[in-house]
Image (cartoon, rainbow over all chains, first blue to last red; front, side, top):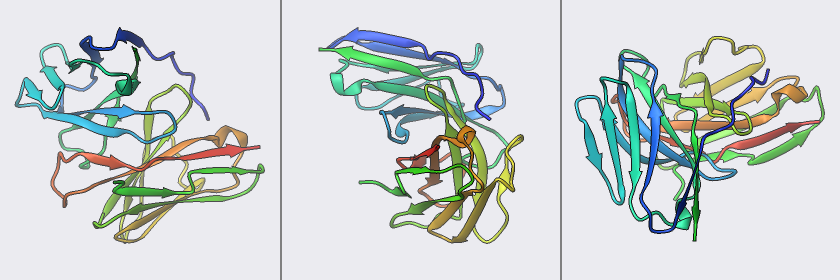
Length: 114
Length: 118
């Protein structure tokens, strides 16, 4: 049945500001991490990924930072735009498990004000 | 454009009805697909791994007789919610890796199916 869920954390920013979304992952055996963006009524959309042998990876307007010591992942969005408003999820894949088997984090609601 | 397609996008039906949801990979073959469930304002929870030509692997707590999965071809997996009840109302999402069988490749997700049981 439906599980009792927590309210998703929220982040509100002004257009043009930089956004930082944080995620604490659960398993030290995870070796692959992905950030997804989910708009209302749609499936998750891939943003950027990072493997555990890296600390940082940059994409277009986005940067992912990985701190394995404290099991923390962050997504930085530069010059945030109203179209970036969505729910953002981190996901982890644990070494030794079926490929593509992902455990999703709680999610963060990002609202960008024009 | 979409690489994983789900159908239907929204279905409303009466309690006790069985509902079939399709997940198709477009322009690529997927030997494995994944089915997730998402309740409102919550995260995605993996339900099962769909394997082409063999039985699906279900996550702990997911009833395999309730959620029937068939992966009869390299481009299609179906999830059938049998004898659905209101508590099965949720957003069901499938995913598939787009590149071969290598580990650590991004999953591409369908746009989900909103299931509402009255």
